[in-house]
Every structure is written in C-alpha cells, then in structure tokens.
Length: 348
Ligand code: PEP
Ligand code: MN
Image 1 (cartoon, rainbow, N blue to C red):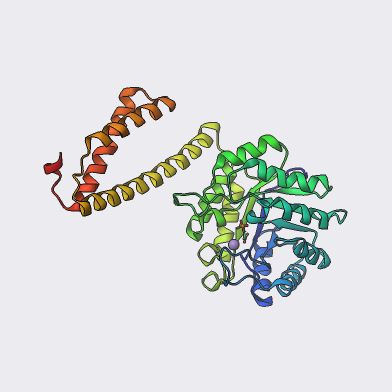
Image 2: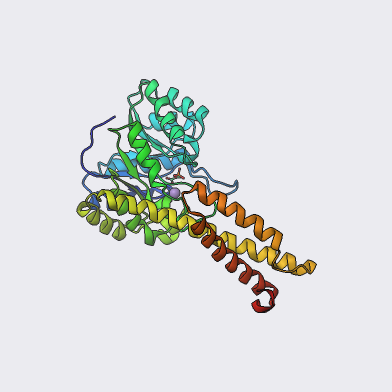
C-alpha cells in the first residue's frame, strides 16, 4: 500500500456518456485540481435490468482520450475479469471495484487473476453490507496475487429503515478497517453516501474530519442531463468550492469524531421510530376494521415486560425502560386513535 501524501481527489461523472462530456469533465477537473484523477463509469451495475448500463468499451475510449488530452490519470470500475482485461488493454493502470462486486468473492478473485503481474492497482469500495471482513477480504484477494491495493473507498451502506442517507456511512466500519490495515489510504465517496448534490460537500468534509485521505466525487459538466445518479452530480463550480474547502479542513478531535457517530445512530433511531409509528397506524386501522378496542391490557403488559428485559440489556434501569415504554405506548395509542378517529379520551 502506498504512503499517504496530499488529499486525494477522484472526480468525474457517474457514467461516461459521450466524448464531449468526458472532454469537458477532464478540462474542468484539470482546472480544479493539479493532482485530480478522472473517473467515469463505463459499465454500470444497475439494480434493476432495463436501465442504462453504460457504453462499455466506447465509453472507455472517451474516458482515456479525455484524460490523456489533459494529462490526467484516469480510473473506471471493473465488475468482471473481462472489464478488467479491457481496461488493461486500453492502458489503464488502476481501476476500482464497485460495492456490489466487493461483496462477491468469486468476481473479486477472477479480477485479481486478470490483474496479476500487470502492475495495475485497485481501489476497493465497501461492500453493500457493513461487514468489514468482507471489505478487507477483497483487499486480501488482490494482495495475495501481488496486485497493489492503492486504497479503499468508503461509500456507505444501504439501511432499513432508510435514513437521510442514500447509503448511510456507518463511520465505525471505516474505523474498524483502519485497525485491520493501519497504513491504508481510505477515501470517502460522499456522492453515493448522500445521493443529493446539496449534501455532498458537507458529508465529504465530515469524512475528511474523521480521517479520510481524500474524496471520490461525482461531477458532471451538466448535472441536470446526467444519465445516471442525476441528483448527486456536482457541477464543476460546486466541485471547485468543495476542493477549496477540502484544503482548509483539518481532523476533528476525539469528541468530535464520537459525536458524529452518535448523530448517525440518532438518525437511525428516528428512522426506526418513524417506522414504528407507521406500524402503529396500521394496527389501529386493523383494530378498527374488526371492531377491537385500541387498548388491550394483556398485550400492553407483554410489551412492557419486553421493554424491561431489553432495557436491562442496554444498561437502562427499570424506571428508565418503564418511562420509555410509557411514552412510546402513549404515542402509539394516540396514533391508533387518530387512525380510527375516535377521541383519545374514550380509550384512555
Ligand atoms: C459509482 O461509483 O458510480 C458506483 C456505481 O458506485 P458504487 O459501487 O459505490 O455503487
Ligand atoms: Mn454513480
């Protein structure tokens, strides 16, 4: 693994869409950063079939030619060994492994074999699930084939319930990865974390404060026309602003780091609370449709006892878990009454 140097910036559109779009992206990036790496997806891993899945080898040519024209290093994603071979044949010296591929040990091994002995290196995105061993395991598969791992890309995790994040950071996983690979470079991808261009800069700067060594950011010369991930592409002007802010951003102290992590946990609590409220409404509607009273004493006692037990597990006193239960239950009864439109008093 390479030594840490200045903050890394990998930027460019989600997908390579045309020769012109790539030339404009390269021109912008070369103005914004003296050491930027031009990114673009040539093969897009789509969640559902039928969507735009990239222009493949043609896109690879647009990316390479645009980067060469501005003397920029370039990078794209390989999802299969065949992609990796095409990238290498085009003269690529590095590629990234996308989130879905990192979670697939067979695909990772095949790409590692395709890269063995070529000197080309990889950047590895975190897998879709917050499993640090799977992330580290992908790196080990490359290292066993002596393929240089240039670094890791933290792009966050799909959660249920969905929070404000498209892919929630789970900052603790990045911390854990640092304990497995202490010297490794870890950069952050706030574009895929947030899914919203207006939130990319703040999330990227937070990642830097938490110790990220740089950023991978989606930037499109005309974000409103992007063929993929339209809502999260920065305009060149926005990327320039972010680049300036990056240079001024230092590391947070320990308390700041811990607070960022607890804020993320609070967001998850709120998301779960929202789901619980919606479930209470469904139960209220169901009770109403079968003519059942909202308040069911036996059920109330069961849930209360389960709160006591779980509260104990979490280090809460019986009084604290009791208070939490009473509050939640009262809200739930109110929600159920709202659904049935029966005044709360008649069931209190
Ligand atoms: C991308 O970088 O465009 C991409 C598809 O990323 P991820 O693998 O993180 O979804
Ligand atoms: Mn994308």
